[in-house]
Length: 379
Image 1 (tube, one colour):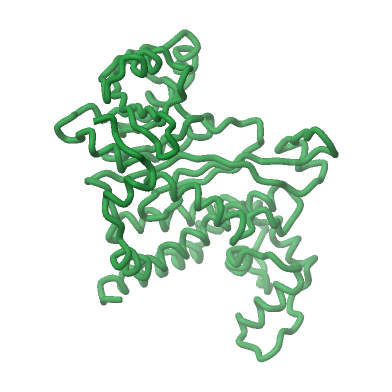
Image 2 (cartoon, one colour; image 1 turned 45 degrees about the vertical axis):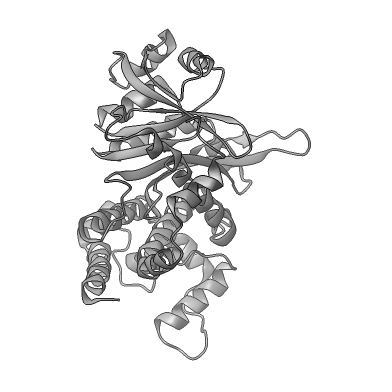
């Protein structure tokens, strides 16, 4: 690691430390003015850091090991009881982890050597479902799944805005299962900026979501469902490799735009026809209509770059065990989820020098990437 990179990492950790230890940050992220006001073992910062360790074993064992490491003791001793920690975490707002994650993300883009794709920041919106502890309050807040057999299963919807090249979660949300993926995606749009390109899967295309992205002067590239959009059906029938068409909102689309204060004016998109490796037809819709800046060949390797957001969910569920909750209250679930996102991001940023070295040694050629996803283009 060179001195400039080391300086970036030192700066990031100093930035986070300054934020965590500031009195204002504590007052904004505690339940009441009395909370964390006395000098105890479980201070505001200690509770934060403990939850960042992604607790997966019995709480008491985790507490004993944590204080053993904190005090550099040869053996684990009982400093804090599980009951004391349970009471202490109730004083903490989960928003603390959201703020800390936003802080490290901003620092990353301001100070690090950020990867781009042809000058664009490649982003993906993607959602998933997670299992929750089966308690009455959790079921009432998040909602339940009713499988064909067996009892009810509490579920939550999660969604993230993910930088697929830098492996950074810019924003993550957890919400009741009644929230759709697109309704959470619209919340991510507040973080978009010019020169962002959002890669969207089959479930996302909607006039109002496209309009929300364009309202931020950002761009999109979405895989379109076949048979649901008239302009897509006409494009498929014409047999052309690409075509610029006009999207006109339907009545439901205009109705969805009004509460979001989005324009309902028609706009042009570019439709791209590609052939998947399994023989299926794939149609992409993109706001990148300039064929000189973004030729057809640009799109043959673009969409596969969305895949890291899928593997990130696999990492969250299998390696980070995001569904292994350390508490059974609604607030504990929010705390655990956002603490996991923060820690996952921090680990990703700290590992970047090693990741770049591996990427350089194993960097696939554009032809290799294309062969993974496509058999051939119509051209």
